[in-house]
Image (cartoon, rainbow, N blue to C red):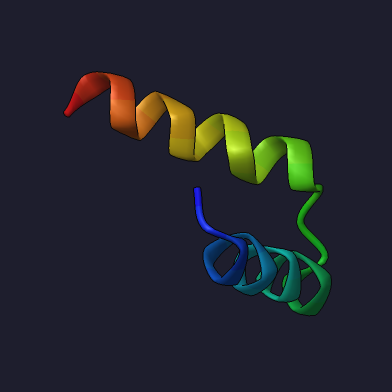
Length: 34
């Protein structure tokens, strides 16, 4: 993943209070099922 995408995800996690691990697991699952 590119650095800008990861930075954006980190910002979203901080704003919403979502653990980063949870976010990346959800993205990984979505990519696997696509």
